[in-house]
Image (cartoon, rainbow, N blue to C red):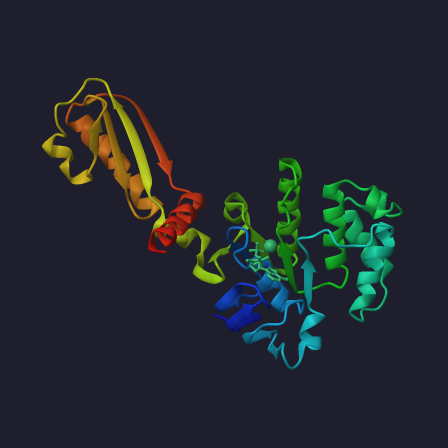
Length: 314
Ligand SMILES: Nc1ncnc2c1ncn2[C@@H]1O[C@H](COP(=O)(O)OP(=O)(O)O)[C@@H](O)[C@H]1O
Ligand SMILES: [Mg+2]
């Protein structure tokens, strides 16, 4: 693996009179990836982003971005990092154009109106450029935040809950915007508590809970390693017992012997292949079935399962 563009070691944050929001977090981010930090409310996602973006002072640990230790040399790295914050904190009385231009200047970038026009057009904000931000819909306001974050052309962009409280259509739209940024080579870290969002967008997923990273992996690997496949087969006629020929599949009879349920295959590929073999074995044994429903567990099942385990352990 090439050098990570962001490297976090032992990051801890305890707020004054507050909880330990981050507990010894280690995390490496690779250039060009979309990394989803997935966790319930209060898990520490915004705190983690704040620590990297200079908004939260860590209690301990180190953060290295683009080879610079942020505690000693944050300016050099900071200009290369963009943030779309969770809260809609921006000057509501500014026009779209002025707010985005201002952000461009903030990091010492030369004014570049052509670039701002390009950003506003790409976010469908061009015809709103002279509107006051307060006059825009919630979704449009969020796009202004993205435009502001893009104005200084960050190489690493944080999106803190980019689609929280946004309707489904706009969420899809936002996903497209984020995919387009990745195409342009921007490394993206997004936080979300929507599993669907991590499942849709991310190359890798980190699961955070109570300030601790519970798991980090390629999304696909996570789903394959922890995923299960379930198949429900409705039989044409009831069986008294699972026939010998099917014993190896671990399928279970229910509903008076008319339903056969298979659950297994740590790894979606293997689970599906086993279901196919099971169907063939049924046919070979002369057992008819009227339907076969197959379901692969989602990231959601994995997430809920992980958090459930911890609650049991706690
Ligand atoms: N400024 C603050 N002062 C005290 N506690 C805070 C502050 N910001 C966040 N917290 C607490 O730290 C924990 C993590 O919060 P946060 O990072 O916002 O989580 P998330 O973004 O995952 O919802 C929560 O328990 C929250 O109440
Ligand atoms: Mg948050």
